[in-house]
Length: 74
Image 1 (cartoon, rainbow, N blue to C red):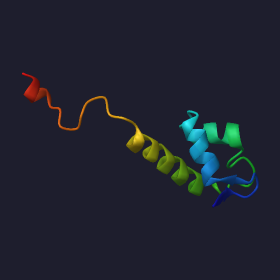
Image 2: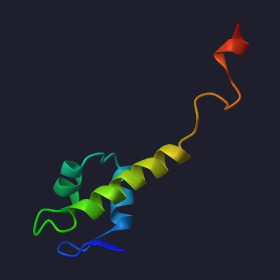
Image 3: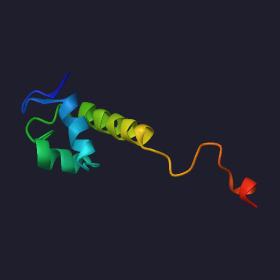
């Protein structure tokens, strides 16, 4: 889906930007031009940014197995 029509930015572009380290709207504006022209896309772009960050965090490997507990280690 197109998020920013002025700059032809899609959700996929935002997800790719998050994979490259983008974490703030300012970064999206600087790298993709989102919300730099008319600004109507800002709220949708922000939602997509939060969703992409959440998806990335959910797919990241955990440092410890889910069943690991500090209490069990004692």
